[in-house]
Amino acid sequence: MLNLTNLLVVDQYAGHTVSEQVLSGIKRATDDGVISNAQADRLLPYLVADKNAGAFFRDGGEGHLPAHSDTETPRFVRGFHDILITIGVVVVLLGLGGIGSVFALFPAIIVLAEILVRRQRLALPAVALTIATAVSIGAVNAALYDYFVSSIPREALQIFLMVLLFPPIMALFYWRYRVPLALAGLFVVAALLALTGIFVVMEQVTGSANVVSDYRLASLMIFLIAALSLFALAMRYDLSDRYRVTRRSDIAFWLHLATAPALLYALLAFVFIRSGGSLFLEEGNGLYSSAALVVCVVVLLMLIGIIIDRRAFVTSGLVSLIATVVAVLRQGEISGGNATFAALFAVGVFVLVIGIGWSSLRRVIVAQLPSGLQEKLPPVI
Image (cartoon, rainbow, N blue to C red; front, side, top):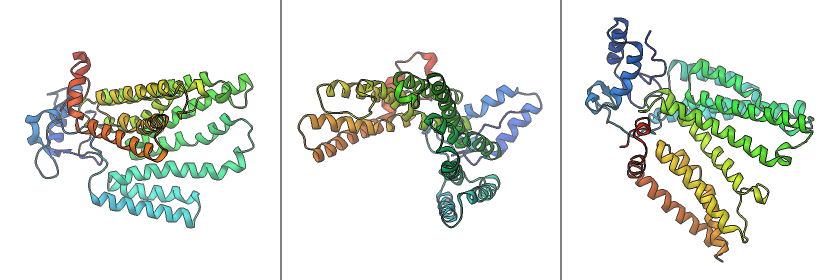
């Protein structure tokens, strides 16, 4: 049978939907043996990318989908109806959490998800309910912490137990409702669970009560490997959907959103390991060299973001970039308030330049890459 489970066709997460007649026609063609299943799975992304195929698509009543539109358009934001429903969801859950117990949130989330996600297929409420599920798990953990976890002497084991509930519940939520954020969240918490599991083993082997502090370099290497693994997973989803018309692209979007800051601060931790692992610049003789390293790391991740057409890698480094500029300006004897505003201005101009010239920058940078790699990346607009 035709494997269209991942394709965003007549789907709640599609920013632009494909005509049901087109989908039905492709399915009949595979059933009749005119084209193979593999050819069918490649046909819809090709039609989305082909400017001559616009007649097969509808885009909010305009009758066509512009070729190579912004590949990072949030598919979960479709209109004010979704926003209104989402506001209602948030208010109801906040009110229920206030007048009831955190354990009452799960039944409410399930009821709302069955109506709004399973039946009405609303995108933004699906994202809100996924986040609410994660927050509710955290609230339950916090409620149980004083009774079961706080007495455990080892910190890594405490964190491991606090994370333990997340993967199975997020897996069930994704299995039932197929929300891309739920799967991305599952990958992130699974990585966090594996990470803390490694630290638990290290604590047992070394006898250390705080292995992250006592074995700083080894811990940073493990953090970096975990961040790189999540980035590789996100890229696998990204490269499998060059035109970003399937759920794989949405999963990659959320994974990049979580991976970019993790990768940034894992790399920055190595920059500051000489000063005890602090992620904040301190005034002194080594300020300028440390600031240069921070800028290099941030610019490197921004370059990666431009190449793969993911703006999460640009936004993730803004806080560190602002802090770096403030520290450098203060070293130059500019007063604290003025340094902060000057840093905000400088970084804001930098971001505007990148944002306005995003397509031009991609065109120039991607053109320098091998042709084989260019063919796997999102098309340059």
